[in-house]
Length: 341
Length: 159
Image 1: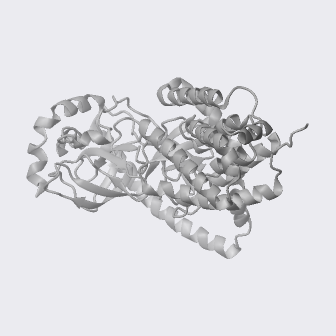
Image 2: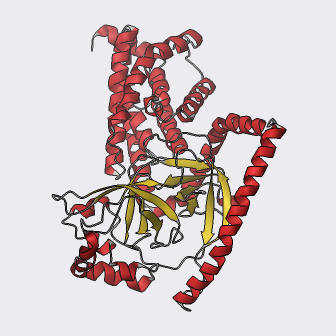
Image 3: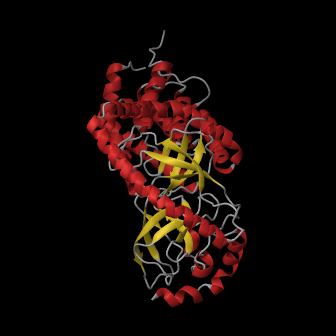
């Protein structure tokens, strides 16, 4: 260092321990935090506190939008309200009509399933949560809602909108919670193809209008337009709720697995609010096939996910998943092969 | 002789808070990836043009705040900001003498380093975001630098 710089250095003195030491201390501290946050689950309480601490900032950003919305509500004209009312009444009638059929169907379904299924396994309670107008990381499909642990929201809770499954709660603060959408690349949801009952896993892509079904063998029975519903495996999502519709099926002879694109039915990037739901869950052992990169290994995982249509028809109880995972590799190719072409 | 003081703790807190708010204000989905890391810019400004012994701690705390508000891995931005603040503090004497455009180039390098570190931590923790658009924020951030530095220079005293 030249004398002049030395002089300058004294002018802009940075006293105390040297910068390098400070950096080392802070670096170790942040590394420790990261490891603790990433590895250890006992930080849940701290996470809640952090979410709570961030809430005022979130609220400050959201407040003008919320105020604008409520102002819009105040100033709606009578004619608009009347028109809306007529529309809603018509919709209500149509829904009631559907519900009448649904109740008898549910009863029938319960009888057919026998006594084994005591509960109806549909959503029992729900809570409307508004999505806060806050941008989290643009590369992750997450949103913040204005309900938290004080409303009974818990981590891992399923969130739906009027059209289908939206995502699940990842973090809960006292009055806010973070929801990961089904389209997040880190999210995978156990699903079944409604038409055939084939079970598989839908993985997010990072785009709000696309999911992939990466674990179906090339000869699986799947067509464009097929409805994908939740299978209820894993116990996070209630079974039988719509998730996505298949928009593209590519059968590449060079690939052992199908390339499937599906469009989520929930309006992931446009929803103003979501429903957080409570339902009676059956305890099901977690499956080991959630790793996205595991599927590329010669398709060993895939047949396990796509069990033969006959047995996959009913939402799986715990006993069924283990044999499927173990024996699927040998039994599977026979079943769907016949109906593939 | 009393040294000239830069912005006080309150001013710094207000600056960081404003940057945090700018970081999460909703933008249309197409524009959102362009958003520069405002908090990183404020941290760099503090370290380059208004250096103080507590610069690193401020950077660390600002990083923690970003992690909390974004709901990211706790400590990720704290580490990233500490590192770029360290480099900025080390280089501050040279950089202060640069014209604004040249400063922008240095800021570009520092922001790119920050983004790379964040990218790397993302990868290590298994949340890799490989979309190329994540690097756009770095460019925009460097482009914003003259404007930001000019504004802050005008309204806040240099140390």
